Structure formats: C-alpha cells, structure tokens
Image: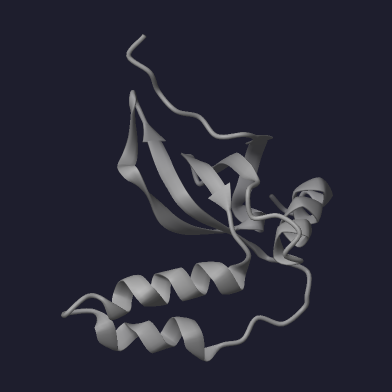
Length: 119
C-alpha cells in the first residue's frame, strides 16, 4: 500500500494499547496469506526473546528483542503470534509461528483467522 489503511492502523493501535490481544486477522502481504492472532509489539518481542533464549545455537540473539523499548506511537507493523502462512490446503507451521508484517505491505485484510478442515 502506498498509504496505510487507516482502519487497519486503528486496529493495530487498539492492540498496542493493551485493550486486546485476542484480535484475529488475516492479511495478504507480498502475495503471502498470513492468518493468526495479533499481539502488542512488547508482548511479541518478549515471546520471541524467550524462544531464542531457549535455543542453544540462537540464544545470543535473544537480547536483540528485549533491548528496545516500545514507545507509544502509531504502529507501523502488525505482530502475529499463533500465526500461519496459508499455502494450498495447509497452514505453515501447523502449530503457529511469530510473524512481523509491515502495515504498508498489507494489500488486503479481513477480521478473523482461517483454518482448514478435512470435512
């Protein structure tokens, strides 16, 4: 998007304010469809830091995610957790991942997440 969707920025601002971390969203960014739950940036950074800290080979990167404090400002990114990239009939990874998507890169979006069923 050349100019971020103001409604999407409003959703991200509400999530960042801490009023909701249960908002599910599906976006198209760079041709990829990403679906999952939004988290405030500080919560997302903390969770990524914890995952990296638990890794023997990646633990030195953990501090990168806790070093910067998140200031009150207009959000520029969406922070997904328990998210999947939808590809064909599967979501990758099946258990959900942590994704950071620039709001400027979102070309389409909808409230809610998508999942597949064998039914």
